[in-house]
Image (cartoon, rainbow, N blue to C red):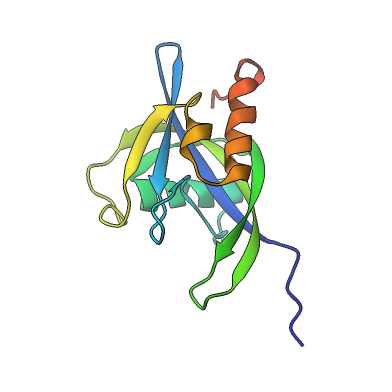
Length: 148
């Protein structure tokens, strides 16, 4: 008998830059359905969750920067696996202050990217949980410490 866990853990980066008084965040498309998402993936053995999130951002979006050790929050979603079944994932989201956006990176040919104001990001993403988290982050921006 197979018992499915309540959820599995993933990590994501919220890549951002500050331009004047505006915070821009980087969204990427998923490979399978082309939905706007954050760079995310599975925890990596030997790395903290925040370090794993930073590595995902580098591989999926070509961004390098300083990642904060504490997550901004989390969201849940249903991940469609290659064999056709779905798994409930809980995703911890870590802010990544971008210092470099490379011209070439591992998954450059697989994804599109878009820099957008944090205030616009909730409407850009397809996932309701991620949209809610981005909206919460935007609403609480004056009280969120993003400086690394």
